[in-house]
Amino acid sequence: MTFEKILRDLKNKNYSPLYFLTGDEPYYIDKIADYITDNVLSDSEKTFNQVILYGKDTEIPEIINAAKRFPMMSKYQVVVVREAQNLDNINDLIYYTDNPLKSTILVINYKYKKLDKRIKLYKSVIDNGILFESKKLFENQVAEWINSFLDDRGYKIEPSASVLLIEYLGNDLSKIANELEKLIISLNARVKTINSTVIENNIGISKDFNNFELQKALIEKDSLKANRIINYFDKNQKNNPITLTISSLYYFFVRILTYHSLKDKSSKNVISALKISPYFVPDYQTAARVYPPGKVEQVISILREYDLKSKGVGNLTTSPGSLLKELIYKILH
Image (cartoon, rainbow, N blue to C red; front, side, top):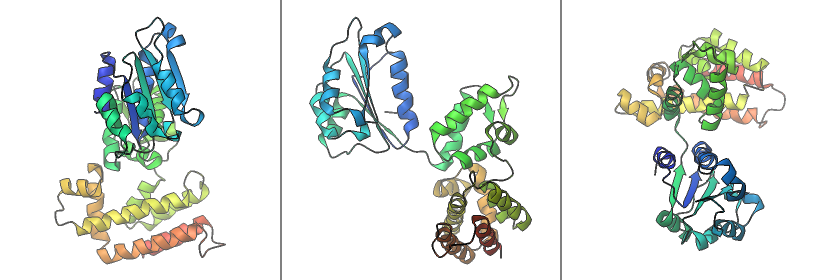
């Protein structure tokens, strides 16, 4: 069942006695659990009928005992188990899930991992409740998610601004949502379109000095711009760690190599194969012309070498800034 379907059913008060929320993306898990704890019971009902437990501080028998209690002066009771991935013997929950009480809404937050399909609990949850798997989005899906998130709140965002957010925050939806919520609160009421300048001024991400702009400088063979960026990184190492820059460049050049290997280089196939936003397709088309396959393989080898050096392997004295300067020089020449 999808996140949207679960939330729609909850809003229509169509409740399941059991929600097992699992997967690598905590954002959707938290959203579902928070909606249930905030909305199913009234404030007065919550006093006696809402229980929050934590996996590292509880055991399966305690969860079962809580779930088997009947509500007091309420149609439902809500039992939420947060951080359930820390529970021992999770399969023992089957002694309750095989026959859950209809008056209890049991919510299991099983984050950062999947429930093993081979154990009996998996089938029991499928048969008697709702199993929701929250998957991490690919990079090419995050921009669309940001657009949808802001559209629901009456805002638009320029592609370059989305790029900055994704570059800075990755595909962690909780972090992105948190930053966007804070940004919306701080915006002038007349501002309805978020651009790179808005991001820079309100979130503190530089629109000119970031890994995406460094990639563009390498595509354009603009050594002056590339060196300005790495000089900025050198002076601001806390927010621009060398390991993150090398990792970003590594995946960038791996995608260029993948692009070279594609027989079908249509935009649609490039987006699918490289798992990128349509906004980036022209960059990879240009990069492939600038960096032929042999050069790309050489660059990937250099990046691996400097990744080790940045971690102290074969390097005890060279600073991160100097390593980056050496790295960029070798890539460009």
